[in-house]
Amino acid sequence: MGAQGDRGVFITTSSFSSGARAEADRVNARIELIDGARLAELMLRHGVGVQAETTVTLHQLDEDFFESL
Image (tube, rainbow, N blue to C red):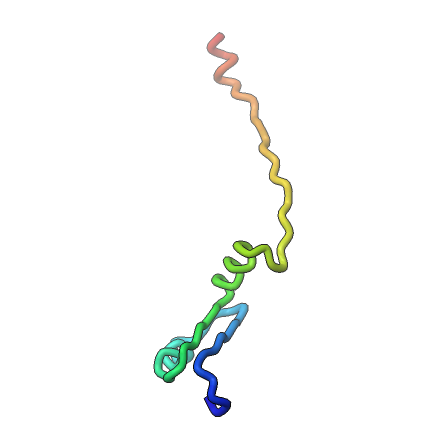
C-alpha cells in the first residue's frame, strides 16, 4: 500500500487463518489469497510444475460370467 499498489496475491502451500482472510477483505486493495488446494488446482489446470503420467486400466476376470455358461 505504501508503494501505491492497489492489488496483490498471497500464496501458501498450507491454508490461511480466518484473521488473514478477514484482513484481506478489510483492506482497500484487491488481494487474492491462494491456498494449497487452489494452488494445486491451478498448477494442474495450467500444466505448471507437473508432468502427466500414463494411466493403465487393469481388467479382472468375471468368474460369474463363465460359471453361467
